[in-house]
Image (tube, rainbow, N blue to C red; front, side):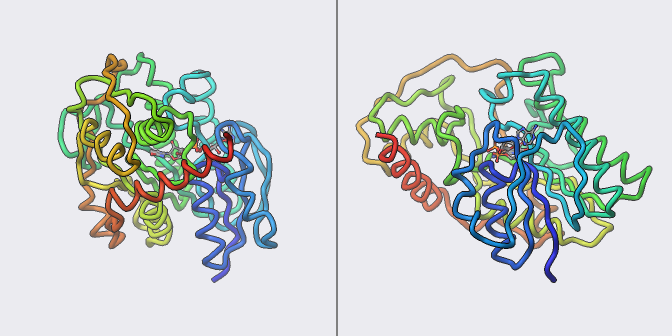
Length: 315
Ligand SMILES: NC(=O)c1ccc[n+]([C@@H]2O[C@H](COP(=O)([O-])OP(=O)(O)OC[C@H]3O[C@@H](n4cnc5c(N)ncnc54)[C@H](O)[C@@H]3O)[C@@H](O)[C@H]2O)c1
């Protein structure tokens, strides 16, 4: 069935892929973005589609439109971007959630929140299950993002309890792929850009800290499946790839796949950087029949090809 679907943060990395997939599925898509970290280049190829509409709007202000479903993705997502104006970051998460939940309440739309593995903070249990309450430093430099996202989850569940909204909460773990911001300082984009430029690859800490990386196509499939679950299922549900890799090993893979001559350069670990991060996706498997299918090397190749083209165009 053709639906009117709104995606906040639709011109960002994940949002632009989501717009594309929902258009391909025959829906009418409204992309709402203030272009803080997203860009028109990410959605340029969609602008000619009569079922696609792009609206410049800041979600910290109310919005009045008629929609059937809302994916709330608007929020700067990488430390360099969310720490640029931390007060604003909390506002985007909290005021943005209130405004979008208000819109869902008025229209009766189903609403999905792009939450994050950062709600677990520096986790004391491993891998992280949804019932783990987390270990977040509420006064640290990352708190604007972590606590903002935690408060947004609270608001989603209170709107459900108080107003009966149909909510879905996805806790997204590290995701990578084409259209990541080249300057966002996230590990995959950093390593690839440094390797393609032949610069030294900066490793924070000793490189033994582990992460798990989900390819964007898999993640988007998970969000769409979550939105389609019956009303009784709200989540929160972890979406991510449970295959762990150390940061040092990731750097070596990127060097191999790009054929770069880059050396590794060790830098100090940033404050509150978790040592391990890995999703337990048992719930997503059971409730969404979802499991990531794209391997790390396959995803890295597609991402390297994207950045290679981008850097050549800039040269
Ligand atoms: N990519 C990941 O690995 C990851 C992991 C966990 C959670 N998430 C969440 O997924 C969502 C999308 O992340 P992304 O990686 O695509 O980041 P992104 O920065 O590429 O996308 C965020 C988008 O939101 C827009 N935006 C920011 N503030 C806004 C505002 N006030 N009003 C309207 N639009 C605004 C930006 O311009 C951008 O287009 C975020 O909410 C993020 O917290 C992403």
